Length: 291
Image (cartoon, rainbow, N blue to C red; front, side, top):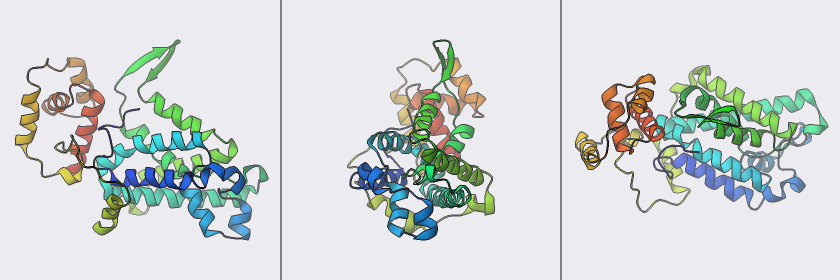
């Protein structure tokens, strides 16, 4: 799975989420089947437990779930780069709160002992992220395996399907709740997409995990923090790749079909050594800066 530029460059919120999931899962999640960390009818409607609510949001209950969940959180950092850490933090809070509310309502309505407890972990956020992934991330490559037509997005869907079905109905309810939360965010319910946190709130994300000592992608225009990049830097990068061959017309056509002008498409392809995925991410992120 390729979520754009490697590492957590300009994605402090995503980095904090991955670190939090790992830190909570190690002491709690690996014993989650015994501790029942997920939400259940009893611990929500009969005896509300705050610590259980917190661990249910972050701690994966098994090693495979942690691996797939952390990989998806890492991939979906592309959305933080597109809309900026501030708006992405709003998306995190909204999708998490709405998905938890929907899970609580589902427990109260179903009262089914077979889904008690629900699977723990940031399922709401992960599956809410599949909504912008479906609508906003383009297909850049198609291929066939054993007669099946697949794309580069298929692997991300397969990872999500594995996570969704990891615990049967206990994981389906949080997953579906997350998808509904993502749809409500996309529909701009209550004008949520216009909201922003105070800047000091989002700046805390960069302090909860280890900072990078250096980043080779520091000069690329990938987030709102890079709005002051100069055209001189772009031309320097373009000149550095001048000796290589021109980008293929098919790659340019893919980017142009997404609505980008030809000159921007060519420049992005040159900057990324003709990687269509990276080029489309850079163009989408640069476009978000202008909104």
